Amino acid sequence: MRVQLEAGREQESDGTTVIYSPMFNSGAFKVPWESTSRLIEEEFKGFESRWLIMAPP
Image (cartoon, rainbow, N blue to C red; front, side):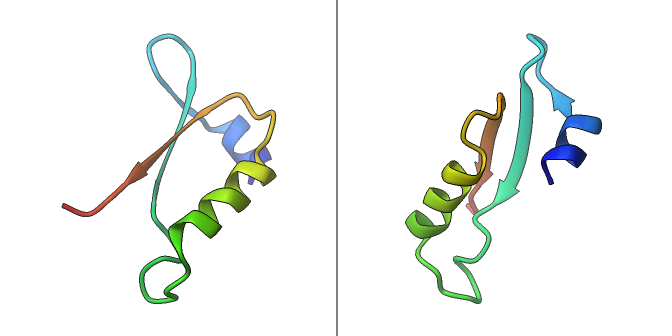
């Protein structure tokens, strides 16, 4: 996934990579978002980007 993100990244005006995602795993799979968020942070540690979570209204 990192390679794909680096190849076709969307950027903010200052050049920062932006990743948009839903709170996956926390809906139908009923995984607490805190658990998924922690795994994402561990996996992408050191990756220069901004991760925006799109929550339903």
